[in-house]
Image (cartoon, rainbow, N blue to C red; front, side, top):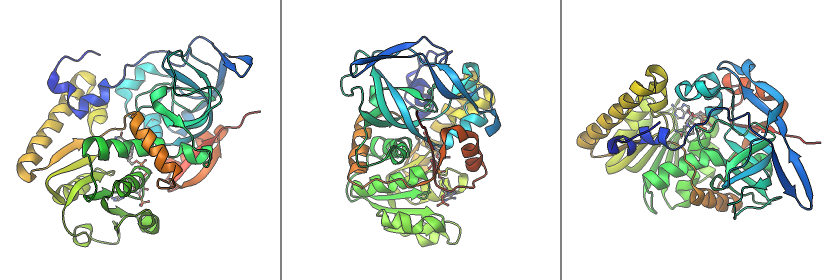
Amino acid sequence: MHFTSTLYTNTPAMQFFKLYSFKKAAVNCDCQSFQFGFVRFFATTCRAVLLPRFGGPEVLELCSDVEVPQLKPNQVLVRTRAVSVNPLDTRMRSGYGRSIFEPLLPLILGRDISGEVTAVGTKVHSLSVGQEVFGALHPTAVRGTYTDYAILSEDELTPKPASVTHVEASAIPFAALTAWRALKSTARITEGQRLLVVGGGGAVGFAAIQLGVAAGCHVATTCGSQSIDRVLKAGAEQAVDYIAEDVELAIKGKFDAVLDTIGVPETERIGINFLKRGGHYMTLQGEAASLTDRYGLAVGLPVATAILLKKQIQYRSSHGIEYWWTYMRADPDGLDEIRRLFEAGKLKMPVERTFPFTQVREAHEAKDKKLIPGKVVLELEFD
Ligand SMILES: NC(=O)c1ccc[n+]([C@@H]2O[C@H](COP(=O)([O-])OP(=O)(O)OC[C@H]3O[C@@H](n4cnc5c(N)ncnc54)[C@H](OP(=O)(O)O)[C@@H]3O)[C@@H](O)[C@H]2O)c1
């Protein structure tokens, strides 16, 4: 893809697509050799969960002979210990982003990871073989983390605190980096500001509450009744049950920033109306991917950009606020701060249930059917 328009490249709709270049045959590459201590190993193939076509959990295929690609100079080979299941994984499996991903099938799903460094590219300086790390791939990576050996760039990984398990670490990064991008890079929240998190019971919302509290903000949130105690314990000053209560009556005053993890017309209307002039409304449900899926890249992308610009202009003139579609992005400084807060016990992500890696279909089915409300993690065992 080649973009020349300044207007396009500066919008979040375009940023979603231009962040990364896409490569065909991401899961069929040459073998890789690496050093571990004084012994030299050759990892030529490994297990991976392949997505050969879009569909239900039954399309996921656990293969034992997927080739391990060569590392680029800035890349790290990670022996996977745990990967969490994000909504993006189940959505991608069902066909979300097909305008990008269909020509690249088969894919490997999975964004989050915790494991051990097994090899490093020639330009990697901050990580070394044997180190325990955790991190997350960007949203459009085609070789994901549902594999024995995942490849991430140095920027996407950070040392895992010794005090937490791989399962705990794998539940954090993708959700926390999504919240970080919105709060720190887009809204630039500062101490003393008021932050409203719509959907504080979910992973991104819960991370946003904790990042907001750590930044010294006053945080209010909407969530289900079962999440209220947890979000208050995490430092939210007010938690409103979005089913039992009238959110517009229960929450008082105006906010500097609203992070809307739900992003339906009702939550957008409420979020916008709660903002002070100059405040930031950020939704996680930007329409760039869904519009390009519907109309193709050539039409969908300009349509998405036009819709976003129209909303930005409208809300600026009607409410005096800034309107954003926000997306997860790799951010080494953000990941570093997330690790620091995680280590200090100020950023937590409860894991509701773990599955063995071999039961990936069952894990996806449980998330699809909403049988498990919180984070689900796949654990990888090695002989
Ligand atoms: N743009 C991006 O880059 C990006 C990145 C990550 C995620 N996302 C998207 O953001 C969404 C959230 O992701 P996640 O990982 O946080 O998902 P999640 O952990 O599955 O959380 C979803 C939660 O939303 C809550 N909820 C549902 N309807 C609500 C409403 N009307 N008001 C308030 N809360 C409501 C529920 O919480 P309760 O249990 O409290 O009811 C549910 O547990 C997903 O759609 C995901 O695809 C986008």
